[in-house]
Amino acid sequence: MLRTPLLVINFKNYLEASGEGAVRLAKIAGIVAEELEVEIAVAPPIPDLSNIARSVKIPVLAQHVDLAKPGSTTGAIVPEVVNVCGGAGTLLNHSEKRIPTSTIREVIPKLKELGLHTVVCAKTPEEVREMAMLLPEFVAVEPPELIGTGRAVSKVKPEVISKSVEAVREVSSSVRLICGAGITSGEDVEIAIELGSIGVLVASSIIKSDSWELKIRELAKPLVK
Ligand code: G3P
Image (tube, rainbow, N blue to C red; front, side, top):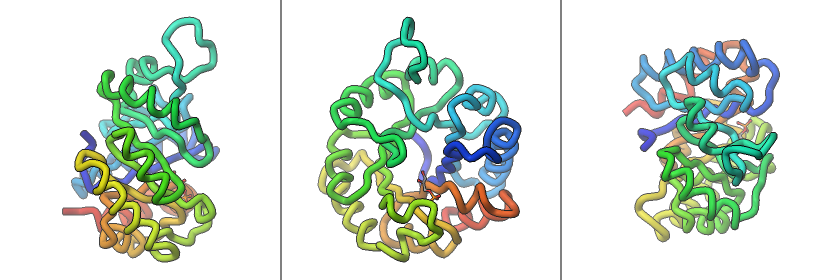
């Protein structure tokens, strides 16, 4: 299980957070995680996953996996391969990489069998309920219209978080809710936690900041127990 409260940094395919930049960012996240004793997981671009997993001790997630088998599946992102490359788990169904619910239903048990963490994204509280029923480790609610805007879900649409928390609670005590979209400041994180979220999923405010270290520190501080 990933420890909570949790900060997940999604590097997406930002160029500055790819290649050498991905290693640098992951290492900074690792230093802050250790210093503040907060669980920080990173989701670098897939081509960087293996290298990052060798470079840091914090959990490294894939941004997506396919429902594909090892072997003759050229180009697919195969859960078993993520596992042998040192990945600790994966994001699934990110709003920039949506997949059918039937695929999520099939792939979650496979990921669990491999001991990989599962963070399934959903756009609305209704979808959160649907995803929670598939019993991933985490559901991450992210209103797509706020992603990358700097307008935090916790401030602009707090009801999305509280309704999602409720939806998850009604479905299963084993599933946990995190949130993302527009999270930019420590205050945004604080409010998310007050609303019942057990962590946050963040990309642009960290990657585009002048100091990755200061921004990660700011966002991780409210998660210190
Ligand atoms: O996966 C995290 C993400 O979609 C939120 O993006 O840039 O609004 O933090 P951002």
